[in-house]
Image 1 (cartoon, rainbow, N blue to C red):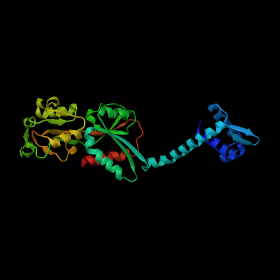
Image 2 (image 1 turned 60 degrees about the vertical axis):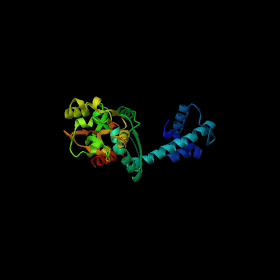
Image 3 (image 1 turned 120 degrees about the vertical axis):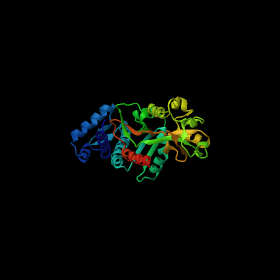
Image 4 (image 1 turned 180 degrees about the horizontal axis):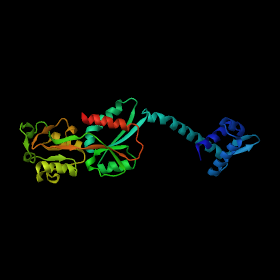
Amino acid sequence: MTLVQLRHLIELARTGSFSKAAEVLCITQPALSRSVRALESELGAKLLDRIGRRSYLTPFGEHVLSDARRVVLDAEELRQRAPRFFQGRESRLRIGLGSGPGAMLRTPLLMQAATRRPPLQVEIVGGGIDLLVHRLRERSLDAVVVDIRSLQPSTDLDVHLLPDMRATFLCRKGHPLARRRKALHFDELLDYPVASTPLSGEAALMLLNAYGARAHPDRLVTLRCEDIPSLIGVVRTTDAILLAVRATAPDLVELRTDPPLYAVARFGVVTLAGRTEAPGLVHLRELIEVLMRN
């Protein structure tokens, strides 16, 4: 069954004549007859009765005609929408954000979508990296933004690297350590709960190189959670210390340590290799880069 065959049936119903319909459709009458017979054969029932020079829809033909008109109209609407879609006038993006990227990007991305002209339909979901990548592979997400050091390398994934983000120790204003003017010794941090999202092996190695075995995440981190906004909320109201990307919580106070912590988070926009990208995705990358640099 093809759209052409459905259009043939619609024209026959309108004119009631094979000869007139063939003339309007710019095909021969035998070609039109073959088209209708093929459609009837596929559907397994007669669509038209020929009475003299006129053709009339059978009861089943009238039922098929209603569906045929709807299908042809939907196809025409799709044809008209396609250019608008690829010109960016009608776009939708489904984005998955890991915990760190979500804390920095969720609100700015929604604000950008709310003020963009032409409108951009955006759906943002959060979750762990495994869940987000699974949804990406199922094509229910167009892209995910995650810490790529926790991403299992795979040939079916394309990664667009984003600017590195500096990580540090953070606390609330008024915290006992926030009053210290000199750099803190690492041991002083251990007097307080340390909150963090699960750390990659590379991040753990940075901590070990800087502070020794005491800084192993299994010993250092006492409050571990995938949802960094929840951790930020705890740190804002208690004496807990947050180990996170500085930009995730601009209102918190950065703690200087001796030796200093030279650590970065490495985020990337991950897409499915070989999949045609949503038109708005290139603008998303540019926006995210600007937001992270700022």
